[in-house]
Length: 277
Length: 212
Image (tube, rainbow over all chains, first blue to last red; front, side):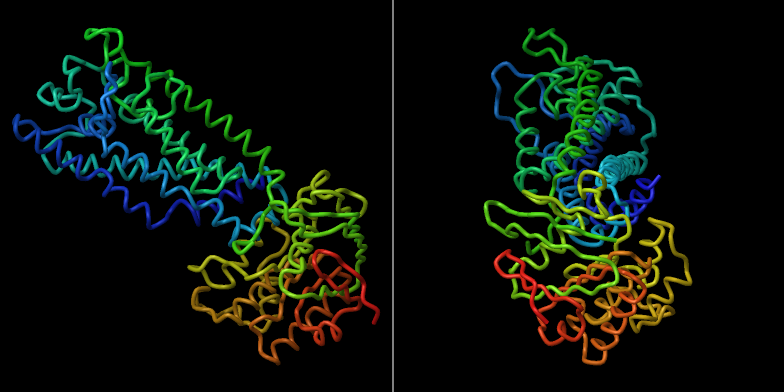
């Protein structure tokens, strides 16, 4: 299986990169903010509290207010920015020798798709490690329990929400990961059609649209706890009802599949040029 | 091995890079491509290597169409533009990693290729510490180590001193004598006249054979 050898090259060059050590900076401030709120209520934040707080996002709103969750944007945008350049950088550098030896454009691109998902997983691992360590350092536990005292800070207007541990895992870990992996895959595939900076801007625009929209078919919503139907109920009116987290995750997986297929087809005709060309 | 470039035209963003190129290359011959910067030499190399696809026309390798029957020539050593390796590994480790992709050659062949280009296989320096000339030599070693049937060398003597140029020219002749089809592009007309069996002039995307 040649693509596994190609993937080995990507693991060496694209997965363990120093830039990923910036991931803690993306979330540390938010983790400390929740720890401060927790100290007001005399509780220690759990890992579940942290994970949900990091991926709060923006609640559904009737009046489409312009309250922007900057930290949420920073996490998603930061990860996408870190993933932006690898494929084209590799293709114009050491990867040229790899692709001609792999003898298959399809296998090379499939290796890059695997790299993409794995490198997003590494970013998430570092982010959750930061959250877990912050939680532990404030006396919290590595559980998916959500403390009742912290619900007003985590769920805001939906403070009556009582998600189960399974739902916390889905909203705070699995769906955000699937969403960001899909966005990153979309960004990489778009790089085969437009310049990387345009691809990055398209994905950023998609994230911003997700803040003001409410549909499982909008990438980005799966990474927003406050738009999940396990949290956002229609108690305040139908416009405040959330969308299914599982549906968002399933749509993200569908986007990944479409991007892989589109990328394989497109890459068969893509010219591999040098940086100066 | 016979490579036939048939009426190949390449346009990139509307600019004509290669214009109705018709060429035939055969094994056991060194072909020289000579022309000024931007004339299309590197693009012709990329076309034959499968890195770019022709806008019109086709490239046949032993009768099979590149891009349709296979993505890249089955046995090819490629040195194109500036060599690029993993900066944190030694030169030998870089070649080992590349060799693992095809599994055709082992330690012995890798060491020999490194020695053939005038480098030391036991050198523990990382690639990032290499001088420009050493990087160039390692790039050539990567191209020859698997004893390919097709050898594409784009400006292989850049950054080499006079002695180094002689060594690399001798190496290229040995590859030709082994039966490889060698295509070399170079600015240096005199060098190419000494090295190549046939010379083609590339200018504004057109390729013409030069009488020798």
